[in-house]
Every structure is written in structure tokens, then in C-alpha cells.
Length: 136
Image (cartoon, rainbow, N blue to C red):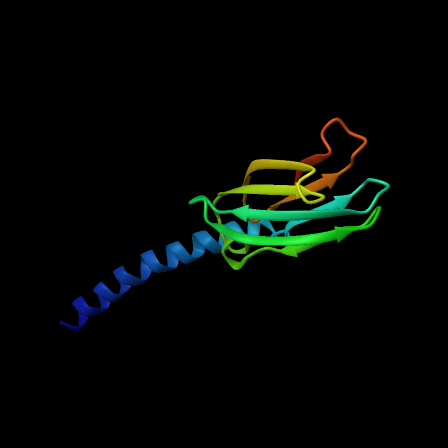
């Protein structure tokens, strides 16, 4: 009876160790996550007010904040815990409003722990609001 309990315990431990090892290996090989959820850069010569609203995959608003950015200034927000320690890709929709509605963009973005969208404001460009994805 003791041997059966030892065997059952051993068979229970093997899958748990395999799952923990798999996740540990992904985090070790992938390196540390990028800390920023997003970054906004004002590459324009003027002062701009930028409002960022982020919707999750169910179109529920999970973040909304306004920033006043001076020329060559940037601001960033930290990643939420759910994305910082996730191994999969998560889909978000970024709604960016420039200067109280003068320009608006709605951009779907897929992110994982090793990527950060960079929102660039530059009125001299054809598209004054651009998003680039920075990845490790």
C-alpha cells in the first residue's frame, strides 16, 4: 500500500514539475519583459494634449488618461501585471485623441511581454499620430 502511494505521488509530481519547468524555460530564454505598456513621444515643435484609451479584447475600457506633452517630451505607463507575466499575445485597441479631438486614431495592437507600442506625435507628417512597436 505504501508503494502505491509513493508511485501515485510521484506520478502527480511529474506533470507539475514539467509545467513549472516549461514556464520557467520560456521566461529564462525570452529574457526580461519590457516594463512599459506604451510610450508617447512628442516629436512636434508644439505642445499637445494626448488622450489614450485602451480597450481589451472584449472592448471594455481598461485604461484612459490624458497627457500634456511639451516638444521632445515623452511619457510612459507601466505594463499591467497580466501582460507583464503572460506568455501569450494579447489584443488591445488604442484610441488616441490629439488636442481634444483635432485628430483621432483607433489602432488595434497585439502585444506580448516583450513588446511596447510607441505613439509618435508629429504634425509635420502626413499622419500626425503613428504607432510603432518596440520589441526585444
